Length: 143
Ligand SMILES: *[C@@H]1O[C@H](CO)[C@@H](O)[C@H](O)[C@H]1NC(C)=O
Picture 1 (cartoon, rainbow, N blue to C red):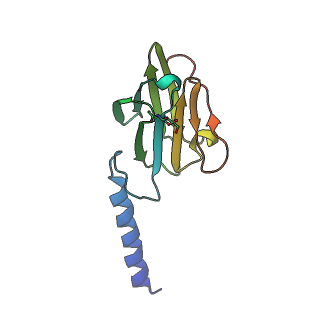
Picture 2 (cartoon, rainbow, N blue to C red):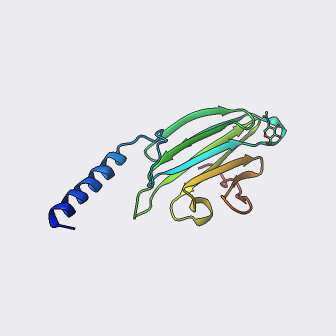
Picture 3 (cartoon, protein in one colour):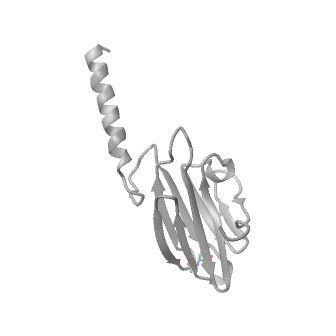
């Protein structure tokens, strides 16, 4: 590649990267750099779930999910220095729990670009592309 062509290619790459940076958390466009999280209400007994997820920078709002309803969002993990943390509250009749649904560097939770979660009374389970669900307990105590 000629030096000029190299510079043009580099400029294009940098432009693409900076354009990707300004996508909001609700943008679901295909982006190699983005992580997608999807949370499904699979609570037993047909219970409604009120879900509220946040990070330090984003409040995704409160969402009422009926059985099998889902809520999803996507974001760009801070890379290469990981500090991304999303935590959610989960409420249904008489119950209230927190769970850290995305923690940079936590393999079981975060080893995914499409992170699909089913919410059970006992805690959330991540459904990997292959293999068995990976289930977690609720956070202990109030965050
Ligand atoms: C939710 O999904 C489960 C499993 O696919 C199914 O058995 C159930 O009927 C669904 N419930 C509703 C309300 O669609």
